[in-house]
Picture (cartoon, rainbow, N blue to C red):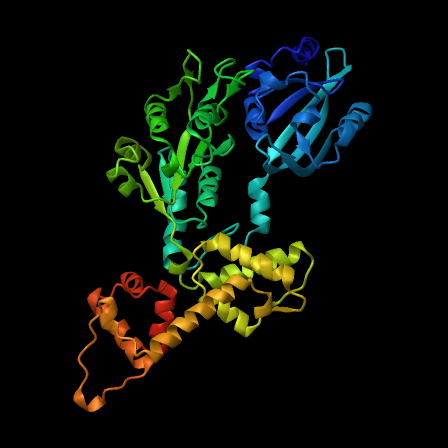
Length: 471
């Protein structure tokens, strides 16, 4: 340990052969618990670059809930000489919690005197996820689904995770694109390095450029120091560009250059910075249409769309709503210490009939509201968000008016079959609606998704009505 003792006294960076050989994140502290050195894996898991944290107290970088407040674990190990290993979470630079096994042991010099501490972390995210996950293979955290379309998504995830090619994730707002991106990173070979997310629609062009590529001191008013951009922070890991369709055209040019050359120049800088980053992009916008309108670069579109994964909206995921309702009900009830066993029949029908334009995120919010409002064992209609019931009542009013006014399918471009004269001139609304469905399915060649769009319904609504009319 002579090399470590010399390193402790001089605060020199750790020799690569010494710390980089460790298969886990490692940092070395001196006897006052200040950081002397750390390997790249420690940089990756904490999000802090070694050059910026040398000399800081170790607890400021490895912020955990392992009982090390005020360096208590450090003091215990240093005074007793015995290693301590505990489990807990660390809070990274990106404000993400990572479950870890935290081991602290003493370092001794050539004379056998204690000269500092070695802190080793082991990322146990995979172990923890196995403990908390459901037994089904098609469930990952809140990415739950049994519908055929979600099965295709689950089947694609392992394939996309095992490559470095760019991935474009498409889908409506609230479908879980962010979760998919993070899962792809965690299942990839880059999992031990950073996963960095940037919202391309949240900042104006100048600030977004600085956020992505960084800037040098003096590049603009307020640039008082050099700042590494998200590309640099994501080096060796994954950069997730959400809402890529909102990225301004000038930045699209620079992004394309980085994807091609794997290097960039920070704002106001002169020297090129090399990076090794995998790109995952996501959007709820139709990028092909934006390309045609000149709002998105065609060359960048093809560069990002090497691999494509589409997340279906909730209304197309037949049967998944019930599973998601149960999942979120248990989650939120447990979080606030309530015992809620389910929904009352009328309330359950309301939430099953709703089309969820905000998808899984909206469903989660609805259940969270209901759980907080619920005072008994089951959620009733009175505990559902008022807007959900208002929309249902408005729809009922429309249907009633249609029945009263002898609504005619021809008014929306449908052509019902000619009725036989002996059937009479009057039909019930159910007869008309049934015939509308038949005609529309004929028109679309049996394509239920297209038929639902023509009728102005969600796919689940069409499916339920087909069951009702035994079609």
